[in-house]
Length: 161
Ligand code: FES
Ligand code: FES
Image 1 (cartoon, protein in one colour):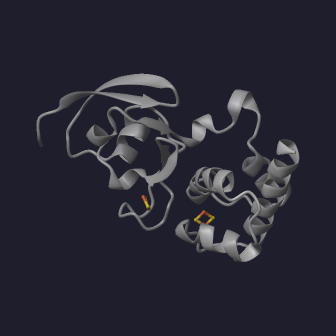
Image 2: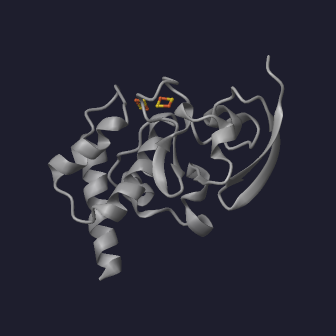
């Protein structure tokens, strides 16, 4: 066990002053120290996408970062995606298109796709499938998830028009 160090994490716009061992992963600290259990841990080596958070606005695997590395950066977790209690475009579309999967894979899918749609507002089905390829779920054929992302893209485009 190594000596704990004081860190300040900025998560979802709030500061968390914590004492953590330098070896601890951001994913574990978010869940166990910040109480933000919406971020899940699947593979713990960067493959499954379950632990995805926004790191300075871009999707990142929180199991591949140490919590100490997140100091000075803005971390956003799934808890902050439904702004003021309203579902995001991706969340709403997953609900409507029956694209919701389990609590492990779905938060990572939502975080990843919200950020991706912001940069890819008019994706083809093939592009959606490619963009989803880093979020693994072996329980589905992804059909309804892809349909939901297309629906979310169309809704975002409509509200931007
Ligand atoms: S738990 Fe981080 S990518 Fe799988
Ligand atoms: S991993 Fe979530 S439903 Fe398959």
